Length: 436
Image (cartoon, rainbow, N blue to C red; front, side):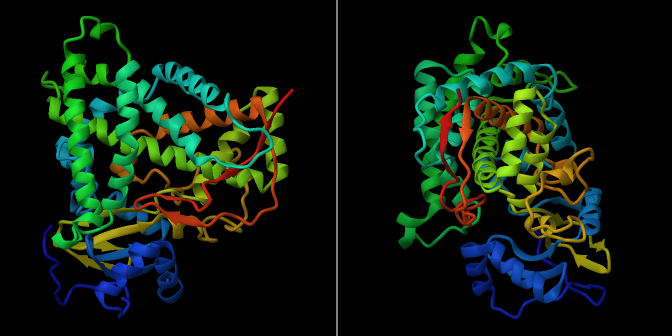
């Protein structure tokens, strides 16, 4: 990461006077609360100095976010980024031409006609998981949602069955949890090795990569590879514009990326969706009526509103590599990170009227504004956004068609940090009874 260059032409937003270690502790323990208080004091742009990320400008203005995401080669992906966790071959680690080429290669399997095949997988996994749900007894929805999204990813991405499915089921969840923690914590001194999430993740990641290497080799030698429609098979058959294939190491890193980015975040958003609709009986009734009528518009709007009001990932960021980056009235020097606070932007009343109100109607008959950023923005927007949206839609549709979701007047669940992702503090409590 390049060192910041401060000069007379630098114009940074106001900064807190708290020492960097104190800022880091506040960001690790409660990033949303820390950034929220700085926003209340300084407005939509302020400067922080954080462990792992270093000197950074935090913004929560839609215009500034759009300028950042369209800054071209003046910025690169945030440094350090998730590539530190996911591997050098991950799309998170690539820049410029390499990133564009990889994105072009990975986009087709996650869009288009194949979605119908994936929809069937999602519905099968929902029905299998819900077959053992208790009746009229509260339980944390996050665990079953995580199992559904993990099974969907394992089947859709790997075509995994039998022993492969069982082994990956054991290996992936603790690896994802450890990686989420490690992504926001600097490597700790050796004496703290037992509690250092970076070291735990390194061990789990190594085991995961060893197993994936074997799975890739077996898939490459599969006599029916050409007939398979799972994403691993499509990646093995795909070619860049110059005719070259992805290496096994690159494929392994991308598989880990899909697991990490597409499993935890989708499962957590679904837990938030159930947490939200149980507290709004009128919205719940409208969703059920729409399912019975075969519609989907209000359900899709509810997903958008859940992502707005309860964003699982609360920031997207870029690293300044130009001498300076002009961003509104600010002139940010090379070496700084610029972080878009998705949480603060989604809570901005200038962009979303009455932001504390859960209102799917705000997304009916309209395209989400540029201030709606649950999947990030620009060339770094989540490549699996369409897949995740499809998955959430099918899960909600299937559950609401099979079960009566019981409302509650319990207090809203708080945000709980799992590292990178924010989950409902009680796991998105859910209670159901099977519909007649």
